[in-house]
Every structure is written in structure tokens, then in C-alpha cells.
Image (tube, rainbow, N blue to C red; front, side, top):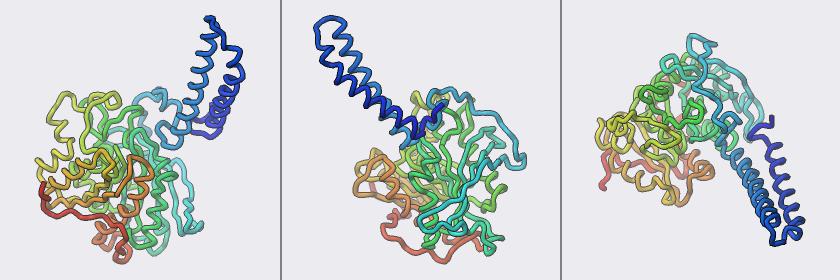
Length: 396
């Protein structure tokens, strides 16, 4: 079967759409009568052509945005959370593939790094998810052999594709550029989708009587990565970053589990969630649980935690006003910074503009990591750096 996101299927669908259009134009004079057959013929030709055009457009859009990566993902036949396979009982990690990473800055492996395909099974949650782990060139250099590396968990939106974090959003390339500019210490990236559950937007929650997704990301994943790779196990060396749903999850991890992630970056994120057809019942009827997963409510009502947050928005974004409310609500010891573009929508182009200054901001949060962690010299200031909100609540 042709791959759902493959170019051959897009070409075939496009050719069929063009052929249907040509045939419709050619047959239209013959269907110009007033009888029932003529009317049905015109209706069938019109609807058939429109359907093929929409299918072709949907396939191209799906391939670009990575909404559904396989037929089972699209049709909802992938089943439940999957079967636990203990390839490495000590940490639940299994490397299933590896590829050299090449960037425009040079093709030598020692300058670009490696991307590994990884399957991770959580010891506590029992959930299994796929990830791409980017190891920077320093990871393989003798000078860093006794160093541990900070880790950034990068989450896509929902539905989304972890592959697009590499190919379209270019996180490894931007990270390597920031490392070479000494804006960011050599960093391990862990790139994933925010939901290990097929066809369900869990909003990274521990769902009552359901999948324990927050536990997977805040307990299972950091421990497994720190034992499987030379990653600093301290929360201060861990950051979560994402766009849309992934951004909401990143902020929630830091605010709810500061012992797992010391920093979070959210691009175009909402700050609360509600039940809908894609989520199912997330709260089990508990209004308290719903409030606890409302990030603005947490900043206003829960005790402040010592984490660093970066929120990215623009006046065109739906979260623009809510971001201002977040700025007004936070309290020390929480630190909060913002990136506000002059314009930009909920799309990859906007996020691509926000990623470089966000990585430079992250480098400044990690500037004081212990000497046992791989660090460069003092990070350089970058143009367009995020604006840091006051350390006390801003006036409303």
C-alpha cells in the first residue's frame, strides 16, 4: 500500500483530479439536456471532480503538516496504547535506528551529530512512545567524554508528527547553530508527539482510570533518558518545549512537576483544556482536576514554583490576551519571559521565527549549570531576544 504521506500517492491523486476535470469539461456538452439522466450526469461529474480535488489537496496538506502519518493513524485502527516490549529492562529504551545529521554548516559527522530513532516504554505508566533523539557533535568528542548534557524535550502539536520537528521546523539545525554560536550549551534533543495514545488528544494528562501520560513524560522519560544517555539527571538541566498542544504540555510539566523540568517554552499554546471529541473525558467529572490543569488558574492560586517559562505569541494569535493574563498572574520564584511578534499566526512559519530566540533564552537559563555538565563559554546575546517579564506580578 502506498504511504499516506508519500509523494507517489500525492502525484496519483493530483493526476486523477486533473483527469476528472478534463473529462468533465469534455463531457459537459453531452450532459446539457433537461432529462433526469443529464441532471444526474452533471451532478455526478461535478461532485466527483470536487471530491478528487479535495482528496488531492488533503493529501498534500497532511503530508506538509503531519496530521496523520500512517493509514492506521488516519482510520483509527491502530488500537490501544500498544504492547510493552522490554528491550532494555534497566531503562525501557530501545534504539531502533540511527541516521547521521547533516546541516548547511558542514557535512562532517563531527560537526553535525546523530539522530537516533528510539522506542521508550515507561516503567510507571506502562505507555510506549516513539522519539527522535538528537545527539550533538560534542557528545562524541573526547573532550566531553566525562560530561553530562542538558536535555530539551521537544513536543509537536496534536495531531502532529515528530518527523516534522526535524524536517520542517528544523530543531536539530537550529540547535546546532545556537551551540556553534555559544548561545546554547551542547544539548540533547528528544523529539516526540505529545500523546502516546493513537487518535486521542490526552493533553498530557494522567487521565482518571485512563492513560497516565503526564507520568510518562515527567517521571518515566527523564529517568530513562538519564540512564540511557549521558544526560544530567537534575531538573535544572531539563527543559520542555513545544508548539500548540505541545507548548501547553511543556508549561504544565514545569508548573506541575518542577522536580522534572526546570524550564518550559510554549509557542502559540493554549493555557487550559476542555473535553471535546478528540480528548474524550479527561477529568472524570472532577472540576478540581480541571482547575489544576488550567495554567492561568495555577499561576493565580497555586504556590509559585522555581521554574523559568517563555511564552511566544503575537497580536494575531488566539492566545494573545491570555498570554497577557499569564504575565500579570505569575509570582516569584517563577520567572516568566515572552516573545511577541508583530504578526504571525498558528503555523510553522511563525514558530520557525520564534525557535532561534527561544533557544538563546534557554541557553541563558542554563548558563549556571554545574561544571560536570557540558557548557560553552558565556552565551552571547542575540538580536530579538525574549523580553523578560518583571519578577513580581505586572499590573493588570
